[in-house]
Image (tube, rainbow, N blue to C red):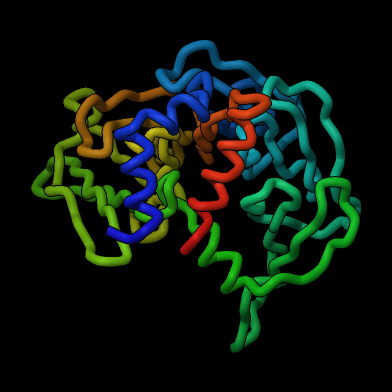
Length: 287
């Protein structure tokens, strides 16, 4: 166990993390076309109370701020920012660059994004990655290798594990393989049958190439959510399960959803507690 993991375990044991770090309301942001546009929606982690936050914007890549209070997203090729309840929308960029994916910096002061390439791709091609401040100023190129290594899709909240979901059809039965990788070893849960209600349907993950999808983790690291579609021409749906693939739930219930992003825990401290949490975060940032 490395220093960072040991510190997290000690904090959990002593109860200090709970005292200085309040849990979020357990929300998942996602994209859905259920009202005719690819809007950013938000729902409870059990799929209840879905709310359309953008109302006809045709959006992509919802990304939570590290403190769980804001959501960045792409609309009309530009980056937008809004509060977690959809209020106070603000346009961040104005460069007409077609953008594909967003990541926040760890300190929440800037946003990384990838520009969609022009086809056909050259023989030696690498993603064009940029970083911008939240007010859109100071946009500059970023090393895509550094960005990808720091903000991998499917990484656990503590940054120590990487999860991948594989879906496949074996002997007429639909299976899920859930991989958890750490820096020390690779671990794969055994192939698990999908819920009986889905056994007679094709499920392709998002993205469907190689039948692989990167899930989003709950803040406590105990559950994952990911999206796929029931048939090749059908719409995406979002599912969630425990990290051991128990307690499987279809969250979007046939109404459609893709690109899920689980809300991080929200800091709920002031004064001395806030200063203590700041010192704890500093320790957590040590490699």
